[in-house]
Image 1 (cartoon, helix red, strand yellow):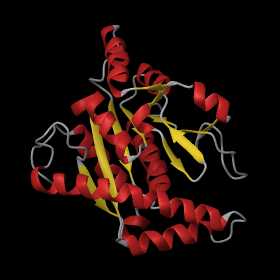
Image 2: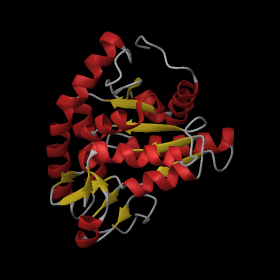
Image 3: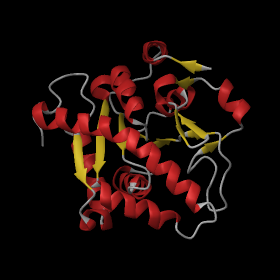
Image 4: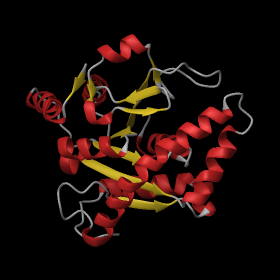
Length: 241
C-alpha cells in the first residue's frame, strides 16, 4: 500500500498536533548516485553526531527493500529487508519507491513517524530524487537536502570497484548504472536550482552540495559530516553556499 505525498503530510501533521515537534530535530536527506560514497558518509554522520552531541543524537531511517540480504549486510542497518508480499502491504511514500533491476526500495511512513517520536537532534534518510522532492513538500524547512556530486566517469569507476569481486557483479553494475542514469537529470536540475537561487524557493530540494569527485573529500567523510551538521544547525540562508 503506497501513500501519496499529500496523505503522508497529513499523517506527519497529525503527529505534530499530538505533541511531537521538530524544533530540536532536523531531517537530513543525503542524495547520491549508487555506490558514490553515500554509505561511508552515512556512517560518518552517525559517528560524528554521536561523538559530538550524544549517543541518541541521530536516528537513521532505514530504506526498505524486497531484495534478499547479502552475507555482509545487517538487517535494520543497511536496509530493512522484507518479502515482496510484505513490501506490497507496507505504507510507503509513493514518490520514494524506486527499482534497481528487479528489486524495489522505498521509505516507510511509519519508520519516519517512529524516528520522529524518539526526538533526536537529527534524523538521517537516503531518498531517491523524486523521494527528495516529496520529502521537501512534506517537511519544508525542517528538511536539509544534501547532494554528493560526482563526475560520471568517476562514478562508473566506483560502481565497478564496489562489485568487481562479487559473484553478482555483472547484474549489480548494470542495474546501478541504469538506475543512476535515470537519477542524474533530476540531480542536475536540483544543482542548477541551488546555484541560481539557493533555497529561496520552498520547492527547491538542496541546501548543500559536496564535490565527491575530489578524492580528498571522499577520503575524509568525517570532515564533510561535521560541516553538514554545522550547516544543519545554522539558520537557513537564502543564497548558495
